[in-house]
Image 1: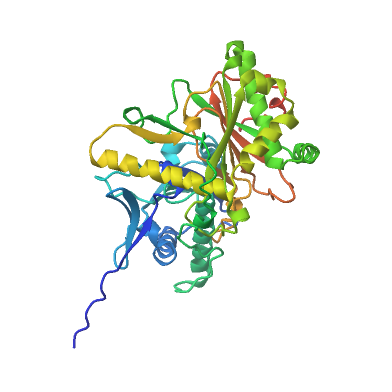
Image 2: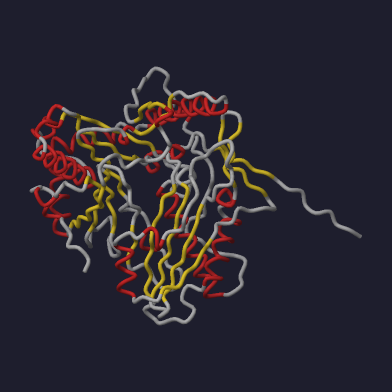
Length: 460
C-alpha cells in the first residue's frame, strides 16, 4: 500500500500596503554575549541553526519564503514543503574579548555582519534572503557576537525585536531540554496587515509631505550618504539628565521622547547655523517614524508594519528663535498627526504610487519613485528613531542577556537613534540612555551647549 505525498500548499502575504516596503534595504545589528560562566557549549552553532530554522518554519513561515513581484503587486510567498531557511555562517577569531568588544562598538560591519545581496525587489530577482546571521566565536571561548541582518521590507524594528526575543527563547529551551518539539515563545507572531479601512474618511485630505517623488533614474531605492562623510557620535543621557528632561516635558505638556527630540533638533539646528549663517533661510526638517499600534489596539506581535512617518519644518532661523518648549510642541503636533484617518490616507497614497512604480518597471518606463522626504537635501535634518522600548536586552539564548547591542550604522545626515542601555527600563529611567547621531564629519557637537552635555567618552 502506498501513501500519496501531501500536496504542496502555497500561501501569499502581500507587502505592498506595508509601509516598510519603502525600505528595500537590509538592517543589521550586533549582539555581544560574554561567556561569564565559562560554559563549554556556549552558543552551540548546531543548536543556534536548528532553533532558527524551527522558528521560521513553525512560527514565521513568511520569513522562510520568497519575495515575488507580479503584475502590479509584491507578495511574500511561502510553501508547506520547501523553505528559504536563513543562512548562518560562523567564524572563529584568535583575539581577546576586549578587542572583539571594540570591533562591536566601532561597528566593524565587514568583520561581524553577514554579507548581503542587493535588497532591491525586482521582477527578475526573487531569491532574496529574509534574514542572515553570522556568529563570531573566540578561540578562547570568552564571547560570541551575533551579527543579524533582516530585510526591512518584511519587518519593522518592533517586529524584528519580537522575532529576536522569540528566537532566543526557543534556542534556550533547546539548550535546556534537548530535542523537543513544543515551545513556549513569549510573542506568538501573526502575519497580517491590520484592517484600518473603517477609518477611511474621504472628506479629509492630507498632503503627506513626509514623502517626495524623485526621478526614478536617480533613485536606487536605498539610502545614499551624499557628498559628505557621515560619522556617528554616541551621546549618553544620564539618569539625572533624563529626570530633568521628564520635568521639562511635564512643564511643556509633551512626552519625554518629544522633549528629547526637541533638544536634538534645536541643538543640531543651532550648531549648523553657527557654522554657516547663510543657511538661515533654508529649511530645518523634523521627521519621525510613528508606530500607532497601541492607540489602534494592534498587538506588537503583528509582523506587518502599521508604522508611518510624519514630519514638520520651519526655517533654520525660526527654529533658532524658538525655545525648547515651543519646539517640543512642534514635535508633539507632528507625532499627533498620525490619527487613524491619517494612517489609512497614507496607506492609500503609498499603495497607489507603488502600483504605478511597478507598472512603470514592468513596462520599462522611467518616471517617478516615492521616497521619504528626509533622504532629500535640507539645510538641517533631525530624523528621530526611538528604540528605547524594544525588548533588545531581553534576548537570552540560554547564557544570559547581551553585554551590548550595536544598532545599525545609518549613513544619512541627521539620523538620531534613541537607544537603551543594558539596564535601561523605559518606565523608570533607571539607567543611562544612548543616542546615536549621524552627522557630517566636520560638525563638532562639543560646540553645542545643548548637546555637549551628553557627549560620551570614546571606548579605549
